[in-house]
Image (cartoon, rainbow, N blue to C red; front, side, top):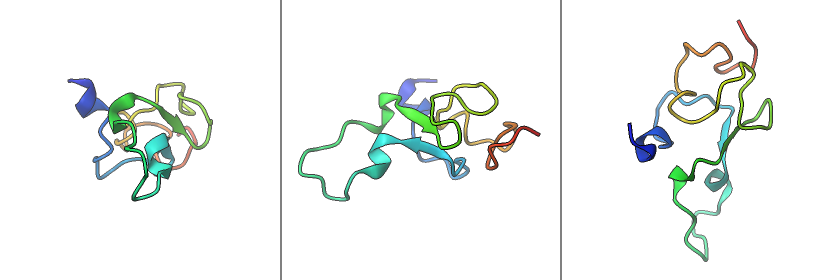
Length: 76
């Protein structure tokens, strides 16, 4: 899988606690924002690039209810 697919924020089942910097940009920025596939993601629970389960956070891995911390921040 290429990075553009791996980092795409278009998954319908994204964990609501996944964050990325372009998520906070105004709708009409004066300067074009960087591409969303720049790989800068973090978990709202841990405030780092690793989730509560110790795995890297990114749209591809945070879009599955099979991940132990998905949606709750707690390990099952």
